[in-house]
Length: 75
Image 1: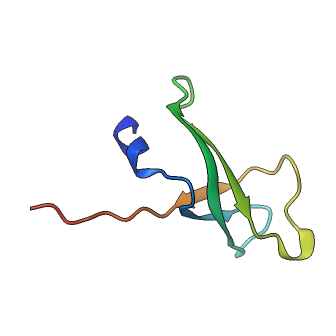
Image 2 (image 1 turned 180 degrees about the vertical axis):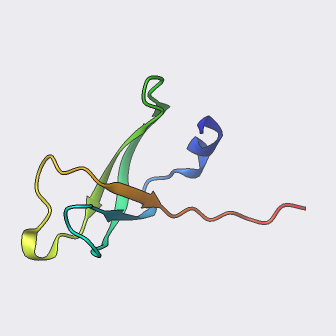
């Protein structure tokens, strides 16, 4: 959602999973964000760096990225 853009920051932790590599999670960090949502796809474009032990991640792979955000309790 557009309201969630303010929660994405450079340096935040992220985790990537890929259906082609079942059960594996790859830890990374957000390096750059375009801070706009594509109207057609509702996707946020960003660049992240992920650890790639064994070099199993290849160019062009698609997966699911979860960005961890800290949410403060509001009264």
